[in-house]
Image (cartoon, rainbow, N blue to C red):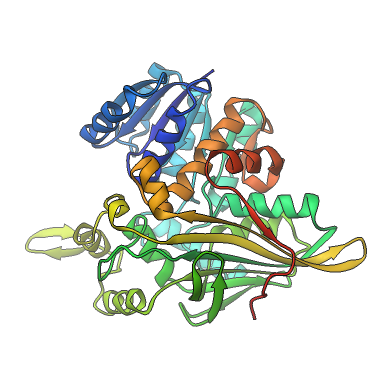
Amino acid sequence: MGRVIVIGCGGVATVAINKCCQHPEVFEDLCIASRTLSKCDALKEKLQKNTKTNITTKQIDANNLTELIHFFDEYKPDLVMNLGLPYQNLIIMDACLICKCHYLDTAAYEPEDTDEPNWRKRYEERIKEKNFTAYFDYSYQWEYKKKFEEAGLIALLGCGFDPGVTQAYVAYAKKHEFDRIDTLDILDCNGGDHGYPFATNFNPEINLREVSSEADYYENGKWIRVPAMSIKRQYDFDGVGMKDMYLLHHEEIESISTIYPEIKRIRFYMTFGQSYITHMNCFQNVGLLSTTPIMYEGREITPIQFLKALLPDPASLGPRTKGKTNIGCIFTGVKDGKEKKYYIYNVCDHEEAYKETGLQAISYTTGVPAMCGAMMILNKIWTKPGANTLEEYDPDPFIEALDKYGLPKRESYNPTMVE
């Protein structure tokens, strides 16, 4: 039914490719493309003997538009799944438009070089206008909306768990549970233990930039900015237990507040242990989180990329990680004239995820939604063209696919609320 290119061969891509290969009736042909061909070939060798999906591999520089266009023209994909770095979102979207194929990613665009003058100028203007300081935002990709609409193509933005499933949960809650949503708290808990003094569960460069940046939340039509890690709460998570969690900015706040302006307050919390925070603060204090290149022994290096090279590869954490994740959305609002609370969430076991795919639950909870989103496009269940986030589509078939393929929802109608 579908020809698909997956760009990337890290943890999330590996999970998504595993899941795609379980459904050859949808994913008939799949090409794994990455800068490191040996990783692609190794994954193909592991999977090909157990699937009817025809797997090929390709070495590709996703920063090279000419190379991408030639590759897409040659392979003729129905869909390109960008499961690499969000730095490359725009260039891959350009190639998809030129070559007339659908596009999917799992995170909003952000620049690799935050000192680039044109980007920096626009960023500083946005801070003055909106008080919105995040490096990653949807505005750059939303500028492609009309182009994809006119081409009759879908660019599905942020189809992981958060962002991704969390936005589908909002659409689901509005469709089935509320006439009006008043408040939303998105809670992301990783209760896993990998045994290292410090490691990140996804790309260290992206993770550490996200967590160390100023935080914000959305309230009464405005962005409220607070220092990084300055708002802390505790929550007793189903399947995990009591955990410390901290308010962060996250990209789905931007899209949810745009598509559901009725919601008066939207916040995002993520759990961290004290060891993680201590290490991160130390790295930041000595400059290791900087994205500004420095000269070292006659060559230019970027401190955060050097730190990334020192830290454990997130894809290697699978066999070491035990425990569970719990990610979901808590709502307040009104249904049939009565006030109501509602909590929809998923609990995922690290060890079970590893048994199935060889990766831990952080990669699993992002890779499975990417596969389900691809299914929605290839099976023509979601057909609305444009550069859209998941709130803009019918949530029911997507959530049904999650229930079926590894991330079943749980629900509570009397949840403990966050202060």
